[in-house]
Length: 81
Image (cartoon, rainbow, N blue to C red; front, side, top):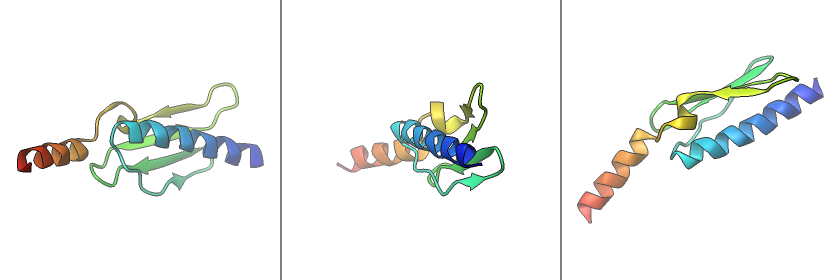
């Protein structure tokens, strides 16, 4: 079980980095037996990571779509300046 927990922790760190690169701010992870899911606190986009010895995986809009709430905030800041 320690191997699964370690793999989930590693996948979560990778997913957090990728989501942050798109402007997302992830909430706490909800963990099941073989997966973890987190949502962006700003726009609600999610990311899920899956444990698998042959091929771990991750999916979700927080990985490949820009955070619309962050983008709106930047646009508002630019307009106010």
